[in-house]
Image (cartoon, rainbow, N blue to C red):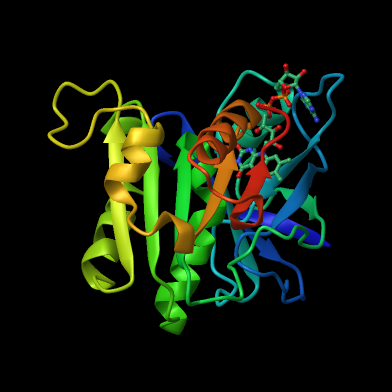
Length: 236
Ligand SMILES: Cc1cc2nc3c(=O)[nH]c(=O)nc-3n(C[C@H](O)[C@H](O)[C@H](O)COP(=O)(O)OP(=O)(O)OC[C@H]3O[C@@H](n4cnc5c(N)ncnc54)[C@H](O)[C@@H]3O)c2cc1C
């Protein structure tokens, strides 16, 4: 479907949020799904083409628009996206993917991610809050420092507003001023923050290296495969 850029802003160090208005259609998607974005008149091109896949960060309740967030890089696609002005046209695919909120609300849900892997979880958390869904969610979110942590303020506010449903655990691995957790996410870290591991569904999203490492860690802790869900951002 055709769409155009309506807004762009840097929401953390090196992280660009881009909002698209969809022409005459109400995109239907489930929180956690992704779509592909094709730039129609990019100022830069290279052999990797002008199309990329992005998880949707907005909630499906925002009719007529979708938002994505991405780490800026030197690729022609990213340089073009950073330069294109409001009104520039793009082609957006239908939403795809099975990485969505579990049906079963009895098990606690543990999101584990770092950096740009936060994107599908933002859509899920916004939707859970708006619809007042009865999930018990823990988000373990790792970043180098506060400045590069996308959605820091919004997540902090969500954890205050959804005290009963949502627990936020942030770790900053290289931030001298951060008073909270600084450890990398490993088996001990997960055990410290997640009680009732056997009654939990673990969901991981982000660059493949990180997701694979987390899956290995969880399996090493005895988490059953059926309780592990992943969304690997191939291309990182
Ligand atoms: C399901 C899914 C969800 C995603 N969600 C997001 C998101 O929310 N935000 C975000 O920023 N990115 C997301 N991505 C990744 C995104 O599509 C881009 O690949 C990424 O942003 C890097 O793009 P680039 O233009 O900076 O680098 P590229 O120019 O694409 O190059 C990065 C490196 O990856 C290599 N590469 C490129 N394509 C592939 C491929 N298909 N398989 C293996 N290696 C490849 C290149 O050779 C290069 O070394 C997602 C990917 C998937 C599959």
